[in-house]
Amino acid sequence: MPVCAVLGAQWGDEGKGKIVDFLAQNADIIARFSGGNNAGHTVINDFGKSSLHLIPTGIFVTSALNVIGNGVVVNPDAFLEEVNNLTKKGVSIGKRLMVSERSHLVMPYHILLDELAEKARGKQALGTTGRGIGPAYTDKVARIGIRAADLADMEFLRPKLENAVAYANALISNVYNDKPVSFDKVWEKCSEWSKSFMPFVGPVEHAVYDAIESDKIVLLEGAQGALLDLDHGTYPYVTSSHPTIGGACTGLGLLPGQIDKIFGVFKAYSTRVGSGPFVTELVGSLANYIRELAKEFGTTTGRPRRVGWFDSVVGRYSLRINGYTSLFLTRLDVLDDLDKIKVCTAYELDGEVVHDFPGNASVLDRCKPVYEEIDGWDRPTAGISDFSELPEGAVNYINRIEELIGCKVDLISTGPEREETIVVRQLI
Image 1 (spheres, rainbow, N blue to C red):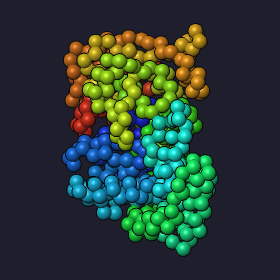
Image 2: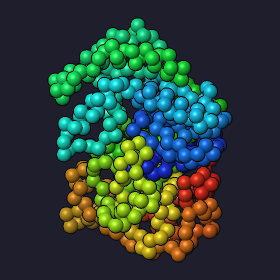
Image 3: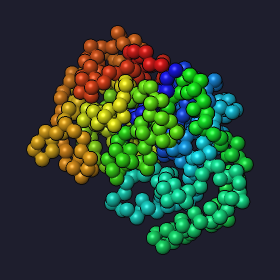
Image 4: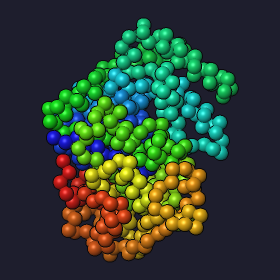
């Protein structure tokens, strides 16, 4: 049975939460593999509207195991708050939620360091969420990070934590000229986590491997998007992890050949949160119209998202680095009332037309979009669940996106509800 990955194909916020909620009904395991609580998925189902930042969207499927892999950095307080919120909604969690013992923890000093670093950047600020994700990954790479498994042995943890806090305080005091954090308070927090958080910690990688060996369906839930990947995104305006398919392998201990299907989720237009180049960005009344209609405000930060036309240069690049077997198109209904819709087919760079996505942010900043204008459609797509019912203009738009990117659209979302979904071809 298949291992299927659902990946953000743009800058995140593509609607992956709704997609995973839809597909998870047939899955045995749903697994997060990258990022932290800087990502946010909004899900609307029988339990109402829920915003998830760490816990996989499959938690609403009572028969499924939900796991958080070693590639995720976990803030135990944020995790436990989500557990509590879900429990209040009537979601039965029981033993259906497991955090990898190899996952690194977001510590209180990471959040402070994130805030201080962003402030110090001034006009060069990256637009981070301020959740401590970057500093947590920094400590992981520096090999001074605290892992979930460390909470199981407090005697073993203490010298590691002393070293990590001393390192953090050297930065806080000497680089940022701020007040150092108290080791005793951090130690007290870890002692608390050893009781409240540790029951959720376990051998995630073994559970996923065993499921694959038993021919169960495993759904990999991506966070953020391809253009935010640390290596392949619009560096330095990226996240600190790998939301691409390579991150799914390293973030869960999977072999590349074990992943059968890769679903790339695109919005029918483009959005971006925070700083960084955005070639098809719209400003003015049309941008405001789309933003307000689609409620384009960050799930994690509440910040207004930047809005733009669909960018097929981004789409082709995203396909190249992820190898999508299918495209999923969301938010098609947002475009229902537009007479004309533009699609970026190429870039103009210093007077020349280019079709490949530049690897340098400063070069990308100089690019201008080359647009193709497509007619809108004469009746709404909102709520449609059968492809044959789509207006001709919407079908033409979908077909053009397929042609420009070079991959078939196999699922279309026409609204936030689970039922407002068109399955063009069998997925799982």
